[in-house]
Amino acid sequence: MAFGMNLTEVVSMSLRLRLPTIFIVATVVFASEAAAQWEGQWEKVVTAAKKEGEISIYLNAPAQVRPALTKAFEEKFGIKSYVVTGTGPELSAKIVSEYNAGLHEADVSFQGCSTLITLIGTHGFLTPIEPLLILPEVRDRKAWFGGRLNYDKAGLAFRFINHSLPPVVYNTDLVKGGAPQSYLDLQKPELKKKVLLHDPSILGAGAIGLSYLATIWGFAKAKDYLSQLLKTQESAITRNYQQQVEWVGQGKYAVGLWPNPGQVARYLKAGTPIAMTHLKEGFVASPAFGCLGVPSKPAHPNATAVFVNWFLSREGQALAVKSYELPSARLDVPPAGVPKEFVIAPEQKVFVESEEFNGQQEKWIPEWKAVVESAQR
Image (cartoon, rainbow, N blue to C red; front, side, top):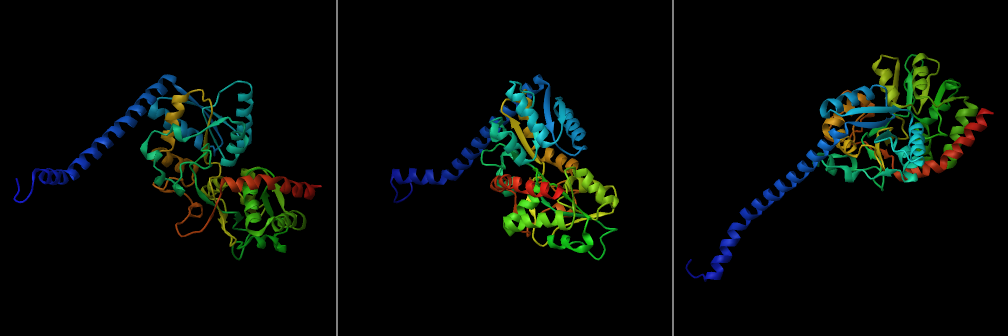
């Protein structure tokens, strides 16, 4: 016994000396148990998924995404992918129609976040994503933009793309003396009949762009701006993203307002004489069509869980960056090969598209539609 100390004091000192070691051992044991738990769960799900043998993907994405996605997933897990392609509204209508008929064909659906939430989620036909997440690297909130695992409050749409949304693409052979600097530049006389905008009366880039202006300018000014573009400037309007960028590249129009970023990237890569630019009014950080949703009764639940975890992992998101040619919302996946205009720099202040913003956007769309229809009479 130490000099001047009774037995109780000696035992207490001994415990204090051992506590750090006990804590470290306990932590290691707990971590090992946690690892064994998710690894065991993952192994069971993968085994069950391979028995299911297939997955049904409803896909709204650039053409090159489909072969890249299906090949990589099948090579890694031996699970065959059956893909249905279409626009977001088309795929949403298909899922809703199937569910109303008691059919459950789709396992996962790739669309825009607002399209998923508005056209499928409001019917109760989407399931929360987070309970499907098994891999720790996918569940780690710090790995994702904004420190969030999901896009909407209900957790039904997972935002895996996050990029700045350049509102203008222009033909570099036709637009001389520098790119447009402001939305107001598109009202200049020299651009009369030379602007092609994406229709803001439907969900998409046009609605997002005009709703952003309504947010920063006020509704009345944004509505008047649209009216002036269509009536005074005699700007043309399209719902076809590829056509919009293609016609600007061909010189049929000098400027495309609110283009699809994936189409812009595609034509830039092909050497088309176009460039894109941000405007001084600022820009929106958007997932574009980069949201993943899972119908409430997937046909192949285990294959669905495997696919979701794999696609949202670093490996899956590296594939997404390469095929979508847009930056991932995963902060640990570099935007290799992505045009710099799409990448949000840490110092940039951007307006982040949110569930609340999209809710307001839906209320404004009928107003934009009335302006468009009036200009077309």
